[in-house]
Length: 283
Image (cartoon, rainbow, N blue to C red; front, side, top):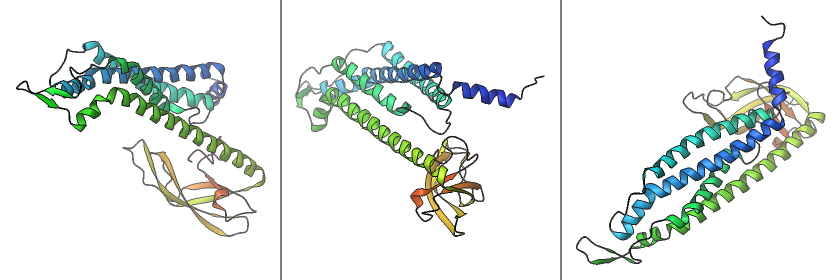
């Protein structure tokens, strides 16, 4: 028995975690863990079968075994990646108080950064071919390398560069998206002070899919603006597979009465419109 509503106690604990230094440290630690786990995964993957297959293609035969430790490193890296990503997402949501959005670079970008570091770390340890430009055939005669084999030869240099470019591009795109979302949220905050909120209804939803974690697609909602005009707005978004907007669902629409026809000034919230990022969580 308790004299305090358990739901209010959970809300109070969740509110205490928002922005707390301890949770921010956990975000940092899980982020570092993602980078380290990704690096271990890539080192294990490159040092195992990839190195052996490359050596065989360039030299005409397999070299020495890399040892079981390299495969254990890859397996550990994969399992650690899963655990670190889950921990990072949970602590990130708990710290921000927003279950719809991740702050910072996010687990995908962090993993790509770790993968690039792992590729650079393993670069000096690729097994060199016996000769450059040719390999021994089964009868002992020399066979010149093909274009494909020359491409394999440059893999130790190409892989770190490609992964570095990919991680840099992912980080840049992530930062640009975060900047755009911040601008949108600032605009919504201003619009909440001078705009109008009204009820609306989803006229074309997205089919629920219990087998998918996320679903995306176009959906349409209808509302009546401050001048009494009925308007239909078509949007595209990504939602959890078990919680997409369904036809007939009630929503809250925020719009600018001075520009009711400007779709860039129309925002929709599902559920509690007073919640953080209620009008921007699905963007």
